[in-house]
Image (cartoon, rainbow, N blue to C red; front, top):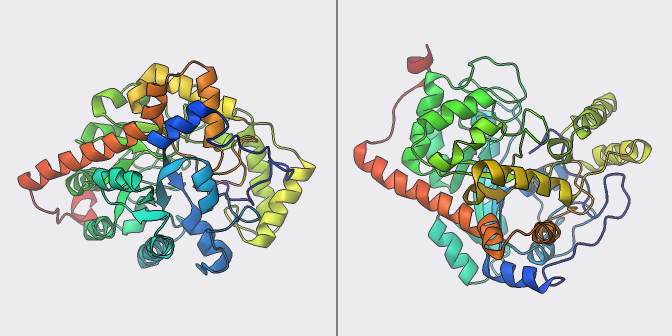
Length: 417
């Protein structure tokens, strides 16, 4: 979930019709690649969009049919984009606190499970790397879950374990604001990384087998987590700070540590994290939303009308698949091809690159990378192999840790005072 939020898909950043995606059939090399190694996307905010737009009324947003007037995501476009596994974000806003944050997260988990029940021919819940592979074999889209923001556990390791038992397979340590034990990239430093309890959260995530997601966290939190984690970490939707100097992106010194850790950085498509200059434009768009009485993350129809009107009057600087590819080229140079993935943040951003308008658009990016001489083996790692390997490695670490110790009973009061 970026600091912006979803707009009706199928429109460019100024509300004009977006280019048609090439689709996996447009280039036979891409069609063949995606048939064998479909896209694992690290972050999609469809659950929150369903909450905001229709309060989880799935009849009103039946994703078996075209939802391009309201969403970036539906089943036909997931199929057209060659998506084989999706981490659905069970995000709740960071101004939700305490038990409210926990119960809202449970509601988000519930809607993912409802979607899988409603569309069994297309979606299948997945809790492991083996589940991902089995879903791919059976032609289903593996549906995993990631909690976005440590506020979702209300400072409770037992709640963390409960989320894992319900199927959550990563947790982003913060969202846009600090929590009591970790600093966010977009807030003023308070802990200068992780507190003692924050380190214990990472250790307990390792023991459970829940991936530590370092998108949204400060650079010091990234470094602290990498020092503590015995399992591979992920960045579910972040790009390269050296290419676009935004605090939500990953510094090179952190990218350089991924090979030793075994983790992956999943490049995002959010324009303000991709193209220098867009961030300032988005700040003005957010201010316009607040001036009209809306939270800047609001996705209700009235809020989206305000977003569209602003974009029409003040066109956003262009962003394209080539800009995303620039990030991937740099991340590959620094971290290596074995440590890259994709995390579009669809339905979690108000604006998208012109040729990456929705979940049907991944082939456009793959075609750009083919043009840059990325090999089929490179692309197979980017789309599928790296993400599956990372989850499997976290599972292996968890098995070993569970033999060493039981569940942590630590409290934030005991560790942080």
